[in-house]
Amino acid sequence: MAGVMRLIANAFGAKRESKSAMTNRKVRLTNSNRSPQTRVEQIAAAMLSDKDLIPLSELAEQLAESLYRDELRYGGWAVDVGLLGSGMFVADALQELRAGDGDLWKIVEADEEP
Image (tube, rainbow, N blue to C red; front, side, top):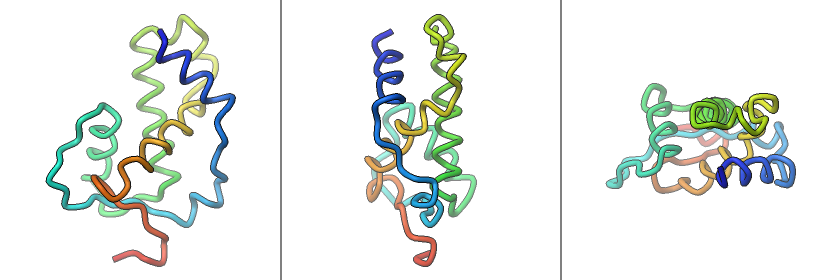
């Protein structure tokens, strides 16, 4: 339950990255020796393994949708998470993607594509 409350606080209090700032960035997997440890890392790595390069905004939205569904599955429906939708998880998804940058995946500018 504390996780849900933290996510709600983040959704309403977190500074959001503008859509235009995310548009010019893409994400690709790196050749890391470390395997994904957390649920978020596992979801993101699975999404990235299907494509060579994914726009940051698209990956963040897909990851947010997965986090949203997980919260609903684990009782988030009881505290109105179902009414707020997956958009409230985008800030958390971006934070997790930034945390893994350079380790499991690399966030690059669109003009830096390999």
